[in-house]
Image (cartoon, rainbow, N blue to C red; front, side, top):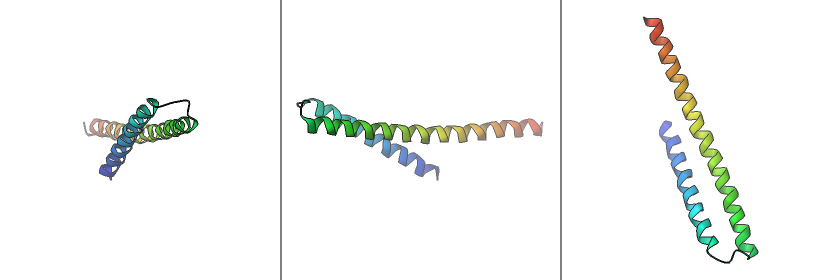
Length: 80
């Protein structure tokens, strides 16, 4: 299960980098073109969504690992 989460985070990260590269390439063209601007806005919104999803996934993993660490510490103290 954990491997699937890592793979999804990696895929989202690669898509995020790909969108950023496309955005940089688009800005080298004529920005006054409305189509280019609308595509850049879409890339920006999709990049924000990917970033938020990655933050949520990573935060959930960190909290789960932190809870496990705390429970391990308390179980070791009870054994002593």
